[in-house]
Picture 1 (cartoon, protein in one colour):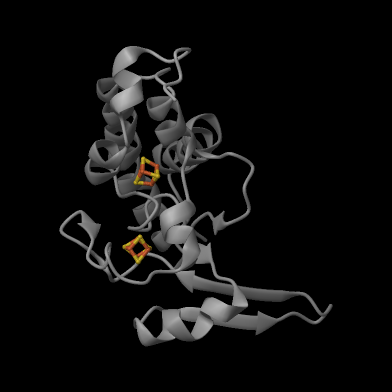
Picture 2 (picture 1 turned 120 degrees about the vertical axis):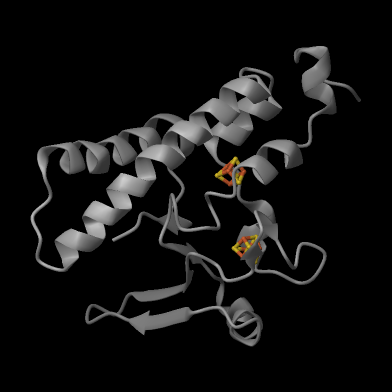
Amino acid sequence: MADNSQPADAQLRNGSDLCLACGMCCDGTLFSNARLTRPQKNGAVSLGMRVVDRTDEDGGSTLWFELPCHLHIEGRCSIYDQWRPDICGDYTCGVLDAYLDGSRSLDECVQIVGDVRANAVEAHAAIAAESGGKPPTAPEMLAIAAMDVYRRRYFNKRDKQHSVPD
Ligand code: SF4
Ligand code: SF4
């Protein structure tokens, strides 16, 4: 049954147009890893994903594959029609949700994606330099802080299925 609380064009949206213009939950722009369930570990390994399976000193366990995903090729998932970890098909971000429920237009969402991607170039370069011992400059610190704001304001939905880049 159609949801008449949504704008008419929102009822036709499936999100693929936005995600094909984005890809930031696969390419390492927004997150450094994505959670796996234990039954999916071997499948992820056989896809060549960089799987991390770690038991912490306090007994907690971590099971994820690292991002960027090598299967994200030319702006899209190269195994879209094949088996993938559940998170690949299940994950939606706040921007996609806003697009699907009609509260943001495609143009608005694409603008957000473009802004984040432009900022991410400087932020990731600064993070990489910092991990090599080079203190970030003031503009670089702003770019790093802006990534956090973008994530919290537009993308995060309090889910713990992805983690931010280190
Ligand atoms: S789910 Fe969100 S972050 Fe992932 S590709 Fe779609 S719009 Fe981009
Ligand atoms: S398998 Fe596809 S959907 Fe999953 S992280 Fe890789 S590129 Fe993205």
